[in-house]
Length: 150
Image (cartoon, rainbow, N blue to C red; front, side, top):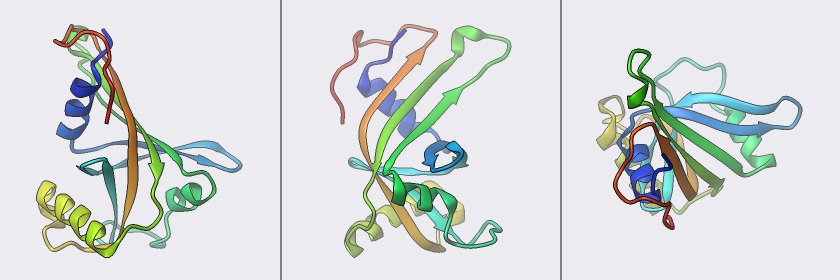
């Protein structure tokens, strides 16, 4: 069953991680697991110093410079009960830089959502504008046909 935009967005916001897809100039789709937070119409993805990396300039940032389109997919899988399956997909557009105030707000959202980010160990926060959210569920949800979002 197709989820309404409001239900799909609620599913998205309730999740603690998802798969971010950007476009690599040579390889095509680059899919990586990410944590994120939503603040209004912006989705924030941290570039942090907590997890080991060879550089703080991530390939997803390079991809977004060349093609600002992205997708974030969240889902629930139950191998024993397929009636509980669902997914939600956000269509995103890279915002590039935000104002210091907006970046601070996005950092606060991440710090509130994840205890690991309480001290905001960010090199930066990647802001992505939410253009739409769609989804599907094996079980019907109230609301019926998709409505407008954000």
